[in-house]
Length: 102
Image 1 (cartoon, rainbow, N blue to C red):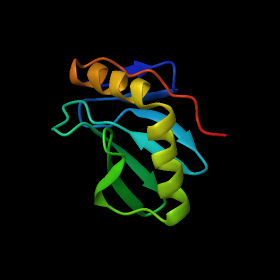
Image 2: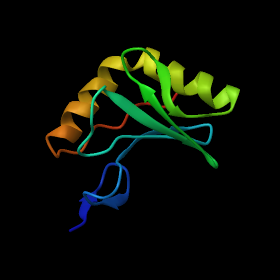
Image 3: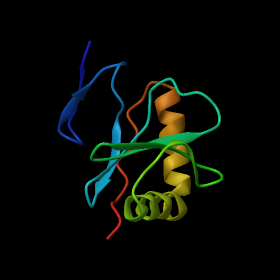
Image 4: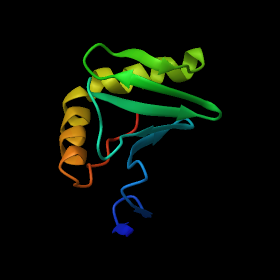
């Protein structure tokens, strides 16, 4: 069953990943029932990567150099908010949007 997300203007279900930030064409998302280690997903066009929150390294996939730099930059500047978002996802709550990089 889809639930409304009035903050980000879309519907989500247990099969979708909440989008926590978007900037420069990069979409940052998290799964509801995530596995260890703590991470987020970055998508840029056809590229996808899983980024470890603690180590700020790509665990799986790849991104072009610029998108990689911005994804890591968000992880560096918003690590506590990303970790809190992961906690919310794991408890089936909507994570709070994170201010995009400028």
